Length: 333
Image: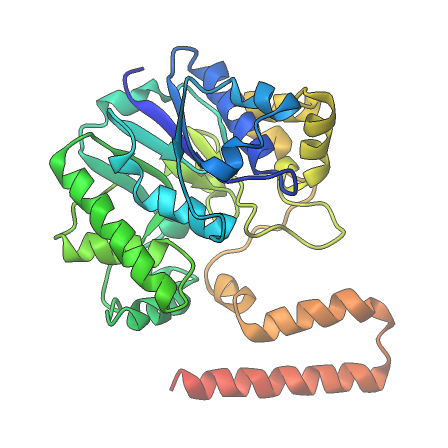
């Protein structure tokens, strides 16, 4: 495999990002033994590479360390690295988020035939993206109206050649992301997509199998190269999560023993084995319903009171839901 696999890591003993990345790197080496893995990190994270953490990072073939002001949060440091990654790595690269597992040989990326590519966010066009309004509002904070855009990219996986247009893209993306921080915008995808628009759409669509967002893209799991299990959106509190690696206890076991748990190894061989025993698939208008504030409100109160809700409380619960839905209908015109 010629293309480098690249990860960005900002981590400490207080989180599980290193463990997540280790599982992803292990699965990459398992399915593509000749792959070259580059980890781009910061000085504060590099200082934690001792003991078991030092053994985990040894799976990387190359470590690039950038200096940062200790006053910057880990989240900001990670996004500063990610949005400038093309200018920190030599050679064609496939960037992959840490909350992933590799399910197939990745060497096919060498023949992808484009300069720059990413997958559509949530495996659908922007007009039907369940997070469309949220992303529109963040773009408007930048002074950009993206209402009529057809494509909105997910930044969890991105292929880029070591070429002029990709370097320029990352330079502009990094600048816009920093501008977004001043506006209170922490996600990096709005600035990624605005940069794509401003530069005349250099980013092409990668096949969905290259970034199977498990919450949204179960259709692509069978042939997925990369399974993105999305730790930013874990499943129901206290219940069985959608995917095995959404359960932090497996990462805790890895941290304590230095070995990947058997069930995780099975999921690397066959991602379907990592799914919850019972799942509930939904699509179409149901997706919109479950993204509404009214549903979130109901979910919180159901967790608290469940089937033991008193009749009068249930009545108040339903009345408030109706008011919220009425307001949403008015807001939509």
